Image (cartoon, rainbow, N blue to C red; front, side):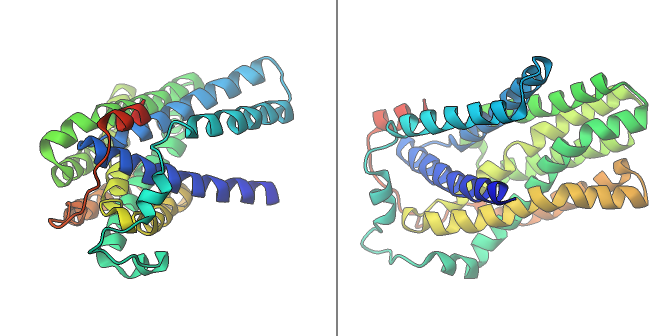
Length: 305
C-alpha cells in the first residue's frame, strides 16, 4: 500500500509537470497540440497492456516485470527531460509584469478553474467507464467470448488514441468550445448506442463513437487551465485533481448502479454528464487578455517530437 501511494503521488506530480510543459510548447507553437501528448499516454496504455500479456505468456514473474518497467522509466524519463524547452520551469514561474503570481491554493477559489475541472471530471468519467466496463458489458449483454469483449475494449482505446492524434487539426479550425460540445454529443450518442443497441455490431459502433468523443475533453481542459503561464501550475493542479475524481470514482459508481439495474443502463448516466459538460464548455474559451510568451518555434517543435 505504501508503494502504491508513492506511485500514485509521483504519477500526479508527473501529470501536472507534463501538462504544464505541453502547454508551454503549445503556446510557443501558436497552435493546439495538447491532445497529441494525451495520445501518447493512450498509446502507452496499449503498449503496457500488450507487454503485460507477453510477460504472462512467457511466465515472467510479476516482480521481474515491474522491476524492469521501473528501470526503463528511471532511465528514459531523465534522458527525455533533457530535450525539454530550456529554462522551462523558470519561464513558467516568472509572471509577466502585469500579472501578480498567486499561491496554488488560490486556484480553488476561481469559478472558471473549478468549472473547467468539472468539464474534465465529466470526460474522465466517460473515459474511465469505457476503459473499465466496455468488455464486461459486451460479454454480459451479448453473450460473446472474452476475446470479443477484449476486442471491444481495444476498439475503444484505438478510437480514443485516434481522436487525440487528429484533435489538433479540428481544434485549430473550430476552437475549444465547439469541439467540446461536439465531443460531448458524440460521447453521449456512442454510450446510448452501446448501451441500447440490440446487436454486437451496434455495440462496437457505439464503442467507436464513445472513444472518439471522449478523446479531447481532458486535454482541452488542461490547455484551458494553462492559458496564463504565471498561474498555470496551480490551475492545472486543481483541474487535474477534480478530473482524477472521475477516473477514481466513475467506474465504481457505474458498477454500483449496474448492480441495481444493468451495467448498460448505468452507463446511460454518462450521457447526462455529457449534457452538463456541454452547458459549461464555454468556460474553456481563451481569455481575451490572455498573456503569451515568446520563444523559439524550432525548440517547441523539438519538444513535441
